Image 1 (spheres, rainbow, N blue to C red):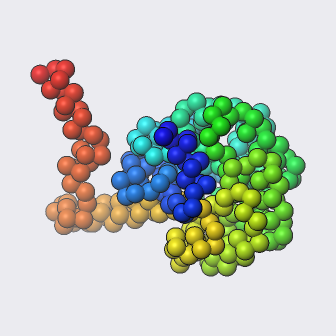
Image 2: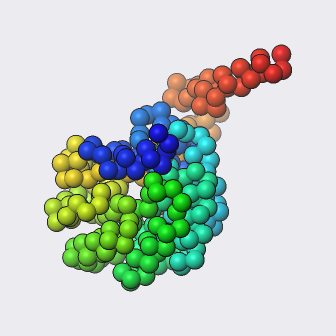
Length: 288
Ligand code: SPV
Ligand code: MG
């Protein structure tokens, strides 16, 4: 089965799937080897690799190139976080053509204005109208070629301080406009409002969640509420920053790496991630 069909089937399957947020090819490959079903090409993470805010600062091409590298590095489907679609309908149509032809299996667009700002920032969040976002979804679905390519619509009502009713109305409109799944986002420290949403959701399309701010929940529990996918969007990024900082500060202070050698990957492990065995084989076949 190809990656697109695989993703579509997984989202519509019985069991909840786990998706890891990645920021580059290496983090995508580490996600795959830990058994994640798909990779989330995180806008937050990709922005962080260039040390710029997650606020539509990078261009679509920069996000696309990062997602492309993740796709080339893995055998699992990539869902690209495409923020608010990089502009208006015309940008969304162009975006779908580019992402799909690059081999990305699905995209997620959110109902915020362009430029967007990360959902957890203190800034005021501004949503576009239901009509405007439904037209983006319709345009995206009309632009795709492979029927298995997935378009996820992300509802930011609860992030923007709107009511639960607003979130439900928006989600229903987006589902009816053709979205393949609904991502309902929350910044609360408990999953209660997500559960409330799930209890009122009529299951017309699969639900996706991002339990960043409410980590005290597990896949089993989310599955009981009918959720089909959980995205662990930024844990790999946060892990790499913390361990890199810890190791480099120790080396800088001590003037030696001897005391951190046990805590970091071996060079051999990096060789494996770089597929050095294939390189060696190619060398033997074609050069030596
Ligand atoms: C991302 O990873 O870029 C996301 C998830 O969109 S969040 O940061 O929670 O908005
Ligand atoms: Mg994002």
